Length: 453
Image 1 (cartoon, one colour):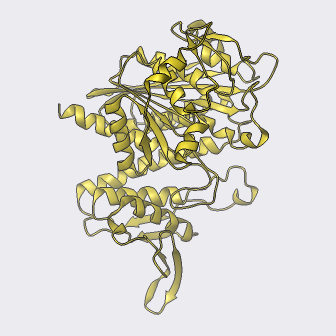
Image 2 (image 1 turned 30 degrees about the vertical axis):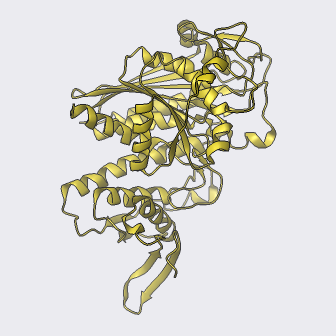
Image 3 (image 1 turned 180 degrees about the horizontal axis):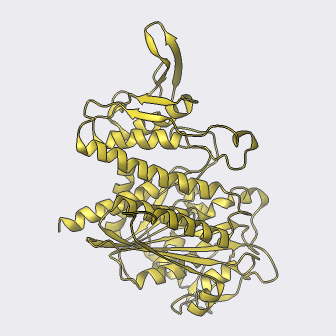
């Protein structure tokens, strides 16, 4: 065994090994035993190697809170499986093994709390993965809204559970509100759109965070239809909405002293005689008009309505999360999210991502993008232009128009939200739950900063 990152070896009992099975996992380069990212990936690889175990003792580095978090999250997420639609697994025992994390500092209260908190975040990530992995025929906007209602019910049930308000706007309510972006994107589908709003207001809140997530349950591109091969993974286009909902439930379960207002616009972007056409003008919630030129740039339209709704709550910070642009994948690849917006907020989001073990990179919003966004000859804003360069930045500049000047950051998770390859580290094929750990870490950071004055 060389110890390369992710390398595993299985040794059966005997020759001094008293456990039924010993799993060795490589951490990689020298010093990786102090790197939470390497430990998280190693724990994920080990989880897939130690199958069919009733009890497991993990002896990876776990001497501080960050390493304990990495071990717990890595193990839980590396062993994640989505088996709902697999006949051969329905009769299997899928119960999780009893897991003990070995640490010489196990009696420390902060390490015990880190393990408990990591379990909460891991469950939120796994639930996000479940929603993203669900076939779009079974997760239409109404079904997605129903799934959020069910998750909310489970999260608020029982003694001591957090109080979280829930509102679901159907197509009639959206029309009454004037949410032209959500209605315009969903106009071509037989499954009507929804807008789900969650409100968590703890009594000890020291800050107010608004979260907005793109929830396109399937994206055909609309009349600006995608090539067939590009539709294959488009069930993941609701990953932003899934992330903000599950992050909100996790923040509430953790009892963080941060009020959270969450908005998840949901629509299916389909082709039909009633679909929005290039050249149409939509009136967003709040009155701004937008000229549509590419119906495959639909995410920014549903986010626009939700962002204005979010600003009305007068939060301290607004974060939106979306699988928004292929341009960001071209720029940063499929493992790194782009972050743009207010400089201070962007810096804090990137720092939170680092703490949470996610890769995010700051991107600029050049001044010329404002001119491009305002280039429509018939409406207040242009939804898209056909300049080849900077499409991800254009999308960010478009969203900025709906933030009312509040501190804001846009997280483009188009690459990291879906993993098309084989399992690696704590990532498994399909939905990844991207941004959930970062949002929780950001809320924790926001609370600590505001509490410190």
